[in-house]
Image (cartoon, rainbow, N blue to C red; front, side, top):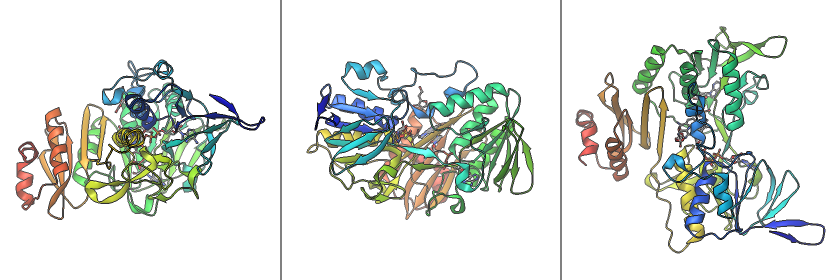
Length: 448
Ligand code: FAD
Ligand code: NAD
Ligand code: ISD
C-alpha cells in the first residue's frame, strides 16, 4: 500500500517486514500465514531475485550431473516436509515479495528501511533474516576472487556460476580451498562430476576449525574428532579426492585472459587448477544494524523470543545470537534447522506474545555427501566417546561434559536411530562409565 507522507516522500507501509529472503524468511512466511496474517500486512525484501529456497540444496542436488535440482523444486519449505512456497503461494496469501532489492539502510528508531532502488518501506515489526556472506580470499590477503573460474557458494547466482565453470572443465582439475562444510560437500559433488579434486585446508583434519584461522576472536569448534574425520577422508580418497592439509593458498597463477591456471600454497607447492572453489567461512550480515542494536558473537543478540535490543525488531537464522537453554549460553548457529525453527519461534512470539515461551532449541546439524549421511545433535564439548564399527558404515560418537551426555553424532543411522540420539541428547542423562557407554553404543540412546 502506498501512502504520501509529505507530498514528495512516497512510503510503502507494512505491519510486518522480513529483511532477507533466505531459509528463515520462507519458514517465517509460512508461520505468519498459520498465525493469521492478513493480506497486505507482510512484506519480504530480498537481494536475491528469487523467492526463498532451501539453500542446502546448492551444494548437493543442484550440483549433480544427472537430473540436478532446479527451482521451483526446492523453494522453502520442502526441506522440512512442509508445503512448497512458490511465488504463486506468496501472491495467493497477499504477501508482498520485493525481490532483487538490497536494503541499504535501516532506521530502527523511525521504523523505516531504505532500498538501493530509493524506496522507503516502513514497518511496525521488523524480522531480520539477513543470513551471512561468504568470506573472501582478499580478507586473508590473497587476490583473485574476481577470476571467472574462482567460485564461492552462498547463493543461487554462485551455484549457477559454479555449474557453468564445472561444465567447461570436464575431467579437469579442481582445487577446493577450505576443509569445512562447503569444502567437503563441494569436493564430493565435483568428484561425482568426474573432476579431479584436491582439497586444501590449514587444519590437521576436515571439519575442524583451529583458532588461528577463525575470522572471529573466538574459535568456532567444528564437529569431527580425528577418528570421525579419518573415516570421511579415507572414503573421499577412495573416490579419488586428494587432501593437502596443514597449509593455505598464498597466491594464484593467471593466464593471459585472467583465468586461474594454478594455485600456490604456503608450503611452496603448486597445484594445477581449471576450477577453484573457496569455502573459508562466513560473516553474518549485521552491518545495517551496527550502532543500533546490541551485537554478540558476531551476530545480533536476541532474547528467548528472538527479540533484539529494540522491542520492535526480531532476528533469526545465521545472523542471530540466541540463548541456547540446553547449554545456558548464547550461541550463533550457522545451520538450516536453526534458521527454520528460530524463524517459526519468532513469528509465534510476534503474533501470540502471551502464548509463546522461550525458544527451547536442541542444536541439530547434518550433511550428506556421496552415499553417506550423518546427523549431530547437541554440543561437541567435553570428552568424545566413539561407538559402533567404523568399517560397517554405521558408527557414531557421544560427547560427555560434566558427567552428562551433551552431544551425539551418528553416520548411517535409521530414522528411529536418529530420533533416539536426538531424544537422548535433549534429556542430558548422567553418564558415569565412559567405557561402558562406548560398549553400549546406539543401545544407550535406544533404551533411554
Ligand atoms: P540465508 O538463507 O543466507 O538468507 C539470507 C537472505 O538475506 C539472502 O536471501 C540474502 O540475499 C538476503 N539479504 C542479506 N542482506 C540483505 C540486504 N541488505 N537487503 C536485502 N536482502 C538481504 N545447513 C545445514 O544444516 N545443513 C546443510 O546441509 C547445509 N548446506 C548448506 C549448503 C550451502 C551451499 C550453504 C551456503 C549453506 C548450507 N547450510 C546448511 C547452512 C544454511 O543454509 C544456513 O544456515 C541458512 O541458509 C541460514 O538461513 P538464513 O535465512 O539465516 O540466511
Ligand atoms: P566453515 O566455517 O565450515 O569452514 C571454513 C573452513 O575454511 C575451515 O575449516 C578452514 O579449513 C578453512 N579456512 C579458514 N580460513 C582459511 C584460510 N585463510 N585459508 C584457507 N582455508 C581457510 O565454512 P564454510 O565451509 O565456508 O561454510 C560456509 C557456511 O555454510 C557455514 O556457515 C556452514 O555452516 C554452512 N554450511 C553448512 C553445511 C552443513 O551444515 N551441512 C553445508 C554447507 C555449508
Ligand atoms: O539438502 C537439502 C536440504 O537439506 C534441503 O532442505 O536439499 C534441500 C531440499 O531437500 C531440496 O529439495
